Length: 225
Image (cartoon, rainbow, N blue to C red; front, side, top):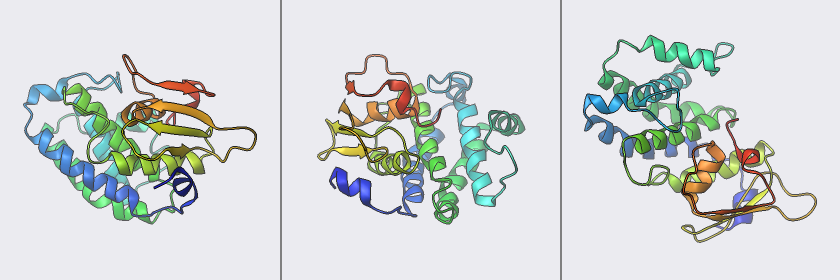
């Protein structure tokens, strides 16, 4: 798929659900195989939360989507903290059970939102990377969900009018064009691997990453603020 095709194609309403199902099949067996102590490990992607708290945030957000519970401020930091606190006395495996249900059922609900909540699926995939990294798993922000995650990232940055950027990826055959259609001059340029590109857009730590970025600052790429 060429960069121009990525830019011009219409939203695929099934894409968020496919990403969640793919990640479910990779992440849930991993979580069920880990000892309880691993759920208390800190996460670099979300320094205020440990593995269990990241998973509780993810599962509660997805169940809200499934059950269409969208009260004001539903995804605010305060609401996230309340959702995590409500699960404080749950077993780790109960949290994983809820996460599995959410990843299985949320795609159908997201498909009906006309793109308004597509970022939830990408955020869940990024959080799965946070967890994998905390657990010492290789390829934290890669794996079988990466192609769908890149397609969703391209779509979200375009519709949200982010800075135009051409990504020449070491591990993807075709360049990826992200962000708004450039009006004056060429887009910004990224050269490096796809997981590092994800880290840039997700605001995750970049220590030791080997990449080139020209025409834009790292902070301009942060999709989640």
